[in-house]
Length: 493
Ligand code: NAP
Ligand code: MG
Image (cartoon, rainbow, N blue to C red; front, side, top):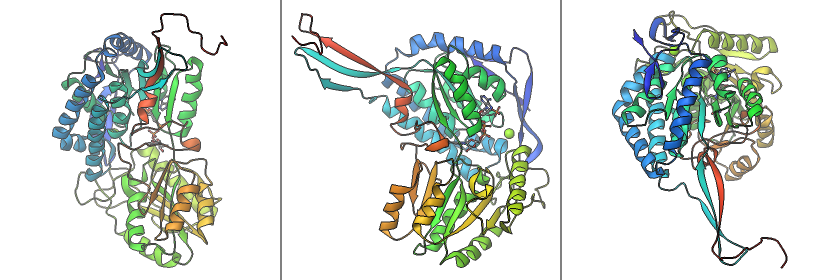
């Protein structure tokens, strides 16, 4: 069994306490992937100190050169893609095709960030005074605290860390306790690509210890967090004491609408991928299906038939469609929502049980589950479940569908299947979500497009795309007066 370490100031080190925690395989809980330092505030202090010192040199490295390092990172990720995917599946359970995709998203983000090193555009504008030049340029913010969830163990850290580094910030990174091995491989790759000591630091450990120590550290300038809405709210509260910049990417309760004119086979493939891909453990998972009444019965029978054919199992096997829940707690949460759904009077049409059978007893498997006849007011229609549970609601019209779709505290992703261009454009206009897909499932973000949500899914920032560079830089406005005299703006002569 491998013993992993923190990476602080260019060195692989244990937690000062010497304590460790285990990372296990959710498909086979007896298998320990590795042990990791159970760090505390003192370890965070060491990492922040290193990052603060390293910032003074890193910020002076030209952005295109920082980009060159990230390009090398991308190249190494390409070479190690399969190895990373295998480790990721072992530590968090999703199937290999998806963990390969997770690494690919990191590769795309590396090359995109690398190319941005030659842009990072500022702006110029005319001055209102003669012989004066106005411009606004981007400068790095400082030490970036990065806290990430387990469901995209490579992609999400890279969405944050690569733009942070490209912009000239230094990083203190706390990955999820369920996926520390993938996170460590990312740091190994940055080291191999030549990132200077202190610029990239990783501190393993629990959320309330290490995570919170980063969030309330006075020498950390910004926090980029992805995780649950509850933890996001706590982070926002604590970070406000030092007025640090905070980006929050939080929960979702995403819906797919299927209109009566839709291509039903296409919509079926979409909802199966959206609801049960990553075992439903995606912030963008399809958790609600809003079906037009005219196609409701037909679509339901197609859906149940295909769902029952999904093969549950170890994600390392190429024949597996759906892996386990990430841990025991997550599986319990899923089952408790199934019980809530039954009590509320929704009709369980398939699944609803802990999965048993060949090769399933050693892991946290749960049957892909569908509730029909769900009322929009039920908890299973409103709350994030984060597991393989789909709630189906009957709708009479597009307007009703959009009203129900919007009736949650979240607003991350959304999807509509229709062949009617008028419906599609009404949905684009009226759906309250950060992302809307037309004739595609609620999942499928691309690295060079903005990603994020409205309402309690976040606090208004976007990751990915050109927008993320606004979060990781400050605007500095510069006036150059070459008149040789005192010129006073706004003052009448
Ligand atoms: P989580 O429990 O909120 O944990 C996320 C990260 O925060 C982990 O690293 C966790 O550490 C840490 N953490 C926990 N408590 C903390 C605290 N008090 N202070 C600072 N850090 C703390 O979320 P999760 O269960 O890992 O992920 C699932 C959630 O993430 C879902 O709600 C999902 O929708 C959301 N998500 C959102 C997006 C998006 O982009 N909008 C993407 C993916 C996931 P430990 O692992 O040590 O507990
Ligand atoms: Mg694990």
